[in-house]
Image (cartoon, rainbow, N blue to C red; front, top):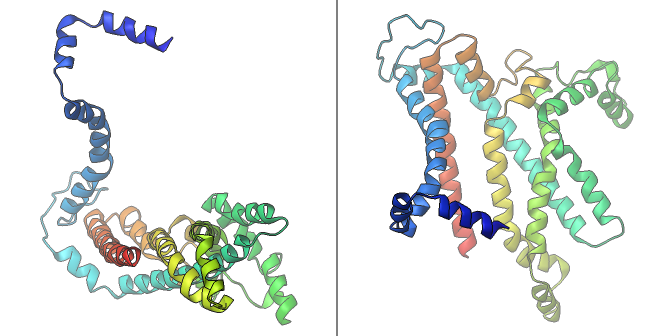
Amino acid sequence: MADKAMDRIAKATPPGIAKRVRGLSDRTIAWIFVAPSIFLLLAVNIFPLIWTIRLSFTNFRVNRMNADVKWVGLRNYERILSDPDIWQTMQATAHFLIWTIFFQVLIGFTLAYLINKKFRGNDMWTTIIVLPMMLSPAVVGNFWTFLYQPQIGLFNYVVSFFSGVDPASFSMIGSVSLAPWAIVIVDTWMWTPFVMLICLAGLRSIPGSIYEAAECDRASKWRQFWTITIPMVLPFLMMAVLFRGIENFKMFDLVVQLTGGGPGSATEVTSINLKREAFEKWRTGYASAYAVILFVTIFGLASIYVKALNKVKER
């Protein structure tokens, strides 16, 4: 059926066009097919990036389209790098980034190691653990907002059950000291399954013959774990850290749903601060410089990390 349709298309093609098509090389035909994707990539990603870099050197405000746009050079970058409020948001982001990655890697690898051991109900528990990752961050944020309520929230009563503290005596999302940890808990609950799946793939990629050879050499389970399991799973762990690090650096929706950056500015991460500069204060040029700095930071750190990852893979 398909051959007949192709034959009809070939017969309907004008001789001049057919002759030109026959004369095209495979490389040219490949570029013809790839060109639309390249055009979309340039239109959606590259052009906005170049435009943002250009705006970062101006005082442009999107709510004042008719005002004169002045070229201010590096003034926006100087103001950002010398602003103590910006550095405070960087610290809040670093706190969120470091602790979420630490807990997600620790818990995710532990769960993967346990699930890798064959037992009854293995598939069922894997499915249950993966469920949080399938939910929308907005849904998760609203769900945990109710759990964190001091009067009716289940979280406070669980803490009270184990510690004896009055459930109404503290508020996870209303306390300056507890709010950052509230976000860390939710993000860890949601994305630990992602790290677990990557670690599980790494564990199941280790040939069983290596463990058999180690047992023949009378290596203990603890020795096998540190000399076989960890080194061979390390590239997968590093890949999970890379993915979660990039995602958590630009975390926005979950924090907005839980705390909105509050109380005060305790949980105001860089993405929320950037949104306020761009769409509340309407300092478009300043916000563009801010976005460029964040892009360079993420890109630079990720590039260094990928080089380290490649070296680990080559060992």
